[in-house]
Amino acid sequence: MPPTYDVIVVGLGGMGSSAAYHLAARGRRVLGLERFGPAHNLGSSHGGSRIYRQAHGENDAYVPLLLRARELWGKLAADSGRDVFTETGGLVVGREGSRVLTSALRGARRWGLDHEELDAGQIRRRFPTLAAADEDLGCYEPRAGVARPEATVTAHLELARAHGAELHFAERVLGWQAEGPGGAARVVTGRATYTADRLVLAPGAWSPDLLPDLGVRVEVRRQGMYWFQPAGGTAPFAPGRHPVYVWEDPDGTRLYGFPSLDGPDGGAMVSLLRDGAPSVPDALDRTVRPDEIAAVAAHLRPRVPALPGSFLKAAACMTSTTPDGQFVLSQHPEHPDVTVACGFSDHGFKFVPVIGEIVADLATDGTTEHPIALFDARRVRV
Image 1: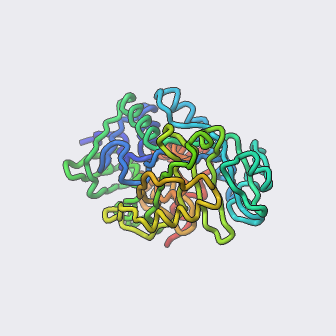
Image 2: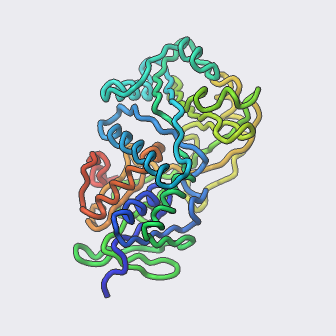
Image 3: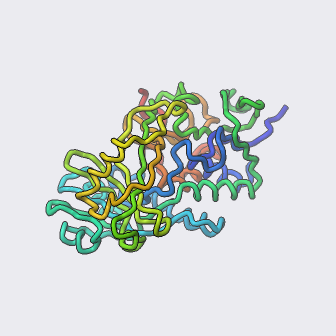
């Protein structure tokens, strides 16, 4: 019997939903499989907001992808009618020599990105919500902003379905098999067995379960997200007045935060990067403890004086990190008909629209014009 589908996409979070849309828009017969519900809050693509910024100086592969992602977010908003992206401006703060600030300045200068280099006094005058120390420096990008994860996933799913994709939710994948060139890929779920010419695996935090032979170790970590109501109200934290920001301390601790996006009672979200322990996705501790909230509040108070204000809520999500901190975005090392997208190492959501385009290229043509050599699964075998 010939394969039922052209492509099966496993995982319909940020990356998988984008891939399903791009594939379906190219006329492919797509089956999408997701173990939870649509735009769920059990993986990594939730929490209301993710930072988008362009000035990445760690590798030349990033900036072209970020520029294309910004174009595609505009198209996604126009095609879906959903509020998927808000341009707010973005600020990176650190001391001279800080890794994140050095990277941002290098990327902005190298690519000629619109940016401003600020000293501490300029940061304080420009953004009164932020109490920069005298030794702090900043890189401000007016084109930075906020991607809305739930809205982005929902928009991609709706458009994928409108282009003919068949999407199954609450259907857990138990295993998969690829028979090689010319053979059918098979996916076994708790309900049925499906076949396709090509397979896309975008399982997020469940990558270690579905990709044990990938050759790249993917570590899953718990990540806390915290919402505080600013003292004095949210008006000074409105988009256009208060930027998205990443603030690195001399010891390497990184605080990041957002404007107030959800009305006068919605507060502002903040987090400390990689503040959680290694975790197993199905056993993730989703209870945020008072001591965790207190630690974030103590770190926040001298840097953003109107916060913590009053605590509103918290949530736990997961990050999936590779040993070298780079993505896995390539054909499977052992199975050329299988495309893998995983291990997005704390900062992947800003790439979601273009990742879907790249995955569609790989699953359709076996190659892409985008610069993705850095993300080849064969680069490191750990």
